[in-house]
Image 1 (spheres, protein in one colour):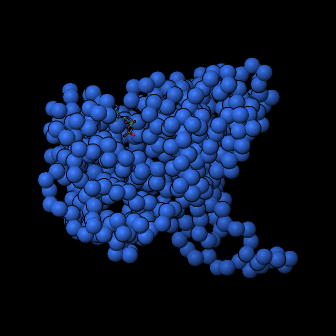
Image 2: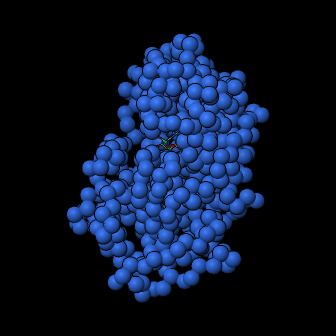
Image 3: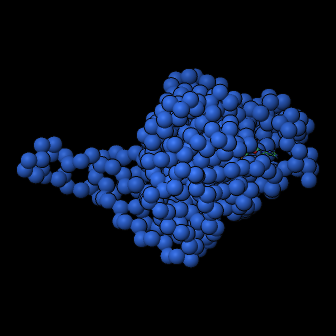
Length: 460
Ligand code: AMP
């Protein structure tokens, strides 16, 4: 199959050829005709499958020769959970639409709103946005939705994880009744299906590969190591193997910063990317990494979600993720579009439960390979796929107050306790009278909830 058989016109085919794509990926082969037919689409596909082109190409096609966009309006709205993903989708639209005279724009928070408001005055054919900033712009009358023809919800599962549900509902309520709705999600868990029922109407359902399938192309292995010695092992791995471009995942922003300093002290050019960094710093870090000026990008899960870095050869899990499905997302950064990839996880004895969860999810015991001179003092127990999952500790009750997740992004208000609790009377000697500041319970301690499809398993 070729792109020209899919019903795309010459200017788009030219851009595809210039990008170097020869054949459509499986999701593109299914999604492009479905979107062109005007149907609603619900697609299970994660990053790395070519899903972005799967919706941007047919959307560009449908916009050709359509009505002119009016002031403060858009014809297509693409919602993404993160700023990075928004920027990347916008970049794809620019790339594939470069021989067309359509306009596109990306809006997200963390940068000034005024220039966005000014730019929107003329209207824009395709608007890519994160939910919070879009609602802010709508609140200021900078954008109206009467002319929307297509709505895309990208990485819907992540939107839910990140607490965007109330924002999404609000945005949906503002959409015209007859617009075409496309929903993409790495997994189709129960909450996602429930959301889908409110968005897509008699959708064409597309599922090209279960979430765990990309893992097959990636050489995955575990390096058992004591926690304290992880930085030294990582440095040795990078030096010994001459790794040129490495994406390293840490669990926390603080951990990302600390590791970056340690790598730099060993003369490895590294930079951190996480929710505390300004948008400018994040964009710069990503650009430097893509251009090879920075050797190691240290990222937290949310910051790294959806990063499109072509043919990334190495991913390191410096810390294992708390949510097993995030492991699959992480290693989805490597072995992309047919390229070979390698993903190594530095695992200490404390992380055995997380490792066991991951191995159960991917239904595979990961091979282990220690590093000479770094044998752990605290031994990582042997894996056993048939062992029962360890019981998770009950989450601590959160205190009151606005909460943010580990990456400093907004969290679902519905996930916070609904009942207003009476103010705690200060105990004698409790000088603050407020108790400790609320910390949202870490995902690690959340209860495990599995659905009837193993590929949909996801801890909430
Ligand atoms: P995505 O899943 O949209 O994040 O795309 C993953 C990667 O695959 C990106 O780097 C794309 O540039 C690349 N890609 C998308 N479609 C194709 C294709 N048909 N052939 C080769 N590479 C592709």
